[in-house]
Image 1: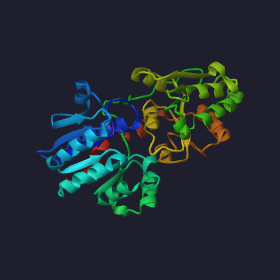
Image 2: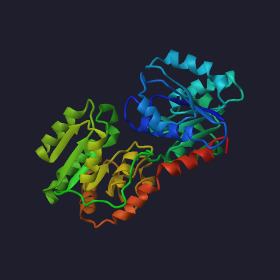
Image 3: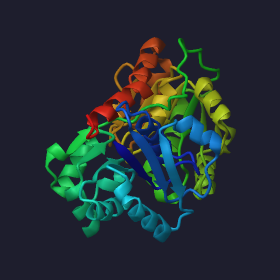
Image 4: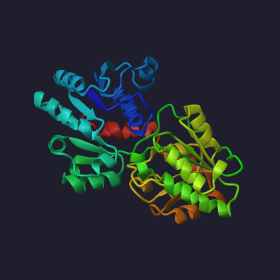
Length: 357
């Protein structure tokens, strides 16, 4: 099978969608069928480092191209490649009409969509609806996303399946977890943009003010950057949190891993996560997680790996954080939860969902 991945972006940033699509790229390049080949076409990338290609593909990669954000260039190349491929995995709903056009040029070509979350929770546009009807299958990152998609599109359930995200194949889960640093540290990792208010960083800061009244030594580290950083800093200062709230901005992968090891609890009270890969990355260091009972998060945080709280409730979040700090967690059970989302499990489920299966 000759498979093509259409991606909004793969390598330029390290956001959730590019990270997951890099996982798809590697799994698609490792299809077991003899003679299988893999290609990818990226809209947003301008350059691809050869080391990134080696990390996330293998010898079955026959061709690839980037478009530097030029949509016309992306579409023209996709249409030229339509007859070279048997199957397309479309990495985002916004690109799905391109897959539809490809299938009109090559009626033998089939395509799947990866549904990440919030982009498919609302009624899609006309071209997207037409493209969804012709899709072979929609690969949903959570059952919540699958249910929302079915509600807003009316697609038959048989066109969908749940394929939970997984950890990068290079992500190392230790055999045992180290003890967290002292004093107690709450960690969150998020884009800090005005358009992403659903991430709940405001709620976390307000909860931190309540928590500090009970656990005075507790600190909060907010990793990430965006156009909302100054306002969030002012909110922390308004609550007299001062140096108890750290905002280091963007950090390297090594520093992020160190933060996961140092923290006592990871928390992201988001109400709009289709899955929540960052929780798994925290669990991979043996850290319990506190999240909102919204979106796909309840499918990630299990009773042995963390706590769920009502959305947009600072008081409930503060209580849950206090409980999480005081509980004697079974860190081996948390690590086991992280391992259930391994790359190997993800690859096996993806291969089983593809038409060659």
